[in-house]
Length: 622
Image (cartoon, helix red, strand yellow):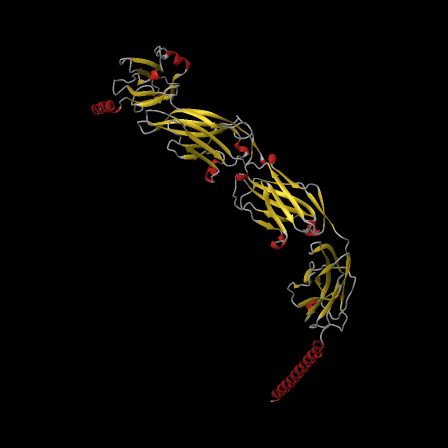
């Protein structure tokens, strides 16, 4: 048993001697690096015995030193560096950075041309036996710095209005005998209110393979996808640098900050990994963005108050300023009116000019007759009325919605900001007009269901000059069912079951209109100031309260009729219908037939009962 254990241990030791083998590795070379920029060489040791934290010593074999090695730096001996490297080690320009117990990196912060040569990484032995390799080396070629960068368009310190276009450019070039690539990045630091307080972030870049990529911060990806953020490379002439032009269609307050352009030189190492070997950054200046809320101005001309005579032309101008880049921003312009034609003087939209140039009139296309809304200049929008009437009086405002940086916004796109002008009061000098209206039932025989009901509206107008009256008949509510016909004049209007609904209208120019009633109705004018409503084949549902509404129209200086705004509504008239004679004859008929049937049933029942009793007695006697 002891012999077997001894044999096993000997075999295991023999296997470990061949399996555990020290190995030191460095990146494959040659490595090309640029003078004046950092060099980083990782060295890894594996397959060792002893402490997990290994020591490392670095040597440089210069090409002009006839193979002699120069001590660079050591992890265990501070006096290890030779004279050429000693001051650089003490200053930290040359140092070792330990990533783990078995790996360190030699860092040369600023390479010099004389640093070119073969670098050797040596690991002192901690093994029981000497096996494997204890050092590795790599050749480093130091090439001159030829990376150049300059700017041709930078920020001048003047604030840009929100929505303005921003263009920044820088020129970059590199001349190297090695095959290297160039990348250019535009970035910003301190984006937001606190300039200098935030870390730099990338805005957009063109990579070493000439692929353009937006930054991951902010909303650069969305703006790049929408074409609002671009980066172009414009090749230079022979010997000239290439120009890189960044365009931001519309700046926002969050774009404020200190901008820079960064150029990087790249090389493909023998291991197939791209390595940045040189980099330069150029400041392009500070950007200050003035929010549209501070710069946007909307004003109506003329200002204050305007007095007009009925039928006179009205021209209002909306002036917009502080938008920024007009060609890069779309505007929605609205004219609003309060205290005019709106119900109860509520605010209504008179017209709007959409970003695509389409004009829409409040109240439909007919509302735009004799009117125009158009752009008359950069930021100037005119509303013109050929003839202004009392319904056009009120307070006017111009509301402007700006879509900063979006020349063609979608209908669902929210505006960047909306701002209104101060109100402009339009007053009309109208002639004195007084009007009164009285409704009554036309005299005649009592009305029955199926007959024609006639109502009269007597209108009295006092004014100067030609006038016409427009009459609208209203039904207020359905009256309780009953018989008889009577009219109560001067009764207060009641609105049980809902508000009044229009029945028919006779316009000022004689056109009649019906509003879809269950019974046929007609309207006409019997004489000057007397207007009639007829309900043909009246039915019980036509019973109820009726009133007429009269509006006065006058003639303007251009010969066109307009609504003076003078109106009067009559007191209500209540209508009931008699039942027809044929309907009354049905009552005795129904009563007679019912009585006869009842008597007949009684007689049959009595006879049947007597017969059954007699039959029962006969059976009992037998």
